[in-house]
Amino acid sequence: MISPSKHYDDVSTLLGQLTRQHAVNGLHVHVEVFGDEQRVRALRRVRAWLPVLLALSANSPFSYGVTSGLASWRSVLIRRLPVSWAPPEFCDADEYHRTVEQLVTIGLLPSRGSTSWAVRLSERFDTVEVRVADAQLRVDDALLLASLMRAIVVAEDLPDAVPPPAELDASLWLAARHGMQARLFTPDGGIEDAWSATQRMMQGIRDAVAEQGDEEFVDEHLSRLRSEGTGSQRQLRAYESGGVQALGGLYREW
Figure: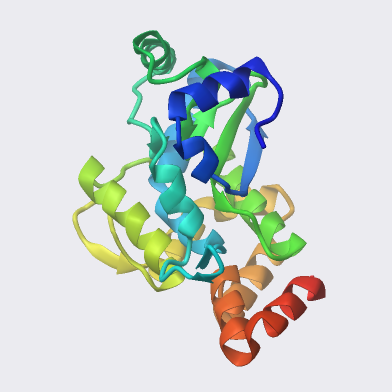
């Protein structure tokens, strides 16, 4: 069913048959940042950590009632859309807005608010909108991701260096495929596992996490995530142990 609005009518017309095949749920987090230049700088910081955030949030291992073989099937579906996954490395707000306007002019987007980048500037609010995460199993899972995303946005000293575009794209795909068992490219051309990347990210945002009053919660929940697994891993364990009935029990538990 398509929501009754001109916007979604335009999106449906653009996407054609993809509209009827595209059923996804995600976690979108808005972080308020005043000033376009400040928002673009924050977008670049989030862009650098998109593979880590995707790996941590992986929670869609099934497709059409069977295991998909991927930790985040939703992310692969999103990749089919125009203007999706990691945004370009915009140097300033003018480049961001000019690029989006050109995409609308050429017909790749029905409107400025239709970009499907994993992080973008909101067209309605003074926020950076982080859209990389799957919908979560538990409220605490969602709060962890919101805390991490907010800290990245406000940590102005956090480096925003990323691997070359092809390697960043590869890291996102590997995060979607393997979740926290993925190996990811580093900005200096190295390779690290997802948990090492998470630790490196935490070193850069710990002060911001503490200033937001989230340090104890974030440390505790990251530790629990490491011991219990991501939502995707928990779902697969439940399904393997008791099929659909056990999976339903996991959903009702939270």
